[in-house]
Picture 1 (spheres, rainbow, N blue to C red):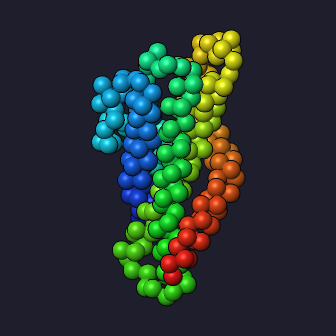
Picture 2 (picture 1 turned 45 degrees about the vertical axis):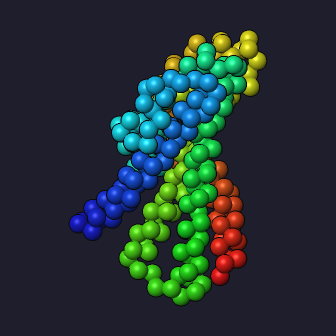
Picture 3 (picture 1 turned 120 degrees about the vertical axis):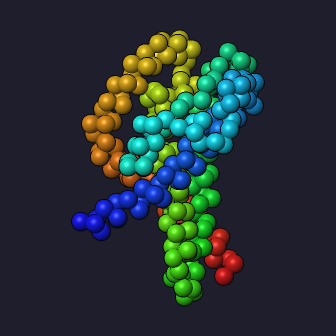
Length: 224
């Protein structure tokens, strides 16, 4: 009983810093893209900070720890400050998932390095090395899931901003009217069928995971 409790707590201890890093950089990416496009709303609200507490959403953080997918407080953006509001919002939406994929790609290198060092070259797998490996692997995996989850083309996820960006103007403003209603309905469906969603995300994430690790292993192998 105690061992089962310990086994369930330890992954959560890893996931807390993974979640804080992933969601914070995700939200900062939105704000930085908005700033680059001419909107200072996120900067003025203090949301370009690397302080995780500025971005934390309690429910999104809990979901990130227990289900590997979650969300933070949305970064405030005023699309009227963009030269092209519709395409500007699409770029702001895209910035978050792209950042998560970049984090995942970066984390795949220490994962590959440690795996090759231990399994191919006989380096001792110490406790410190194990901690680093597990942390980097969870950071790698969680950011792929976070990117895919946020690319779902339904409000309030980033994918909806990207989808709205390619919609013709006559549909764009009509869809935006129902953004909040559609988003709440989807979240209810997600909580009911979250295991099915997790299975679908696993299926989609698998080729991305394999591709990133293949590139990382190839690159690391050049130095051994």
